[in-house]
Length: 290
Image (tube, rainbow, N blue to C red):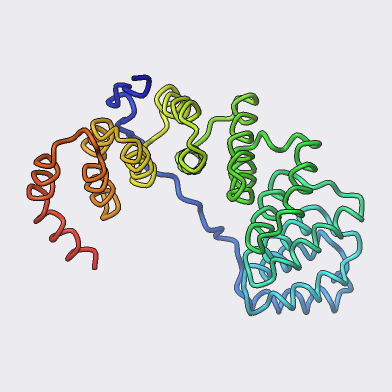
């Protein structure tokens, strides 16, 4: 059985603490931003891109002033790529993802190609409006410029193409060819694609990739593996993943029980034993969570 890997290899103790994005300590308040903006208008620097960069950044990161950011942006002469990225980011994260895509098109019309951050923001905007056509076009553009090798761009591309499973698997192959290490989020999408397509050979290569590249198995990736093995009747492997998971949730328990219940070769008594043994654990877990 090809998938009968030693799953102890898939679980590791990480000594480092998770890295969380730092909120800039220099982000000024909206009141201070308006005061700065007024000063730049009085000194006739409100059209200068370098003087206005902080003003735009502060406006776009505050939803109530996003419209004001657009009006202010239109008065800037020859915006820099940094300012374009500020605008695309703010629009893509707010309620205007379509406007973010239009902003990207305007930027390209001005002769700017964008950078890896540009593609992360614009692909998220495409995903939010399910614009597969635009997403493909941006994908091609990122390929031409060589930005697809950035992990976050790859994840954004996979997200926009999540309903096209064959393309998702093809994109993962491209990541491997470029020696880009995938993370647990990417692996979850790969496993879902394999399960949907019934592609067992690819599933085997995904599991091998997880082991060989020391991809950390969090609760979401663990649940995906349990579900995949349970669907295939490989409850022994599913149980091995389950037993080694550092964190489990209600999905983990349900996936394991369903895997036992659906298994044609397991005796029914094993399912009953697992349910009985873990019944009170499930009850306590549900009380704690809900």
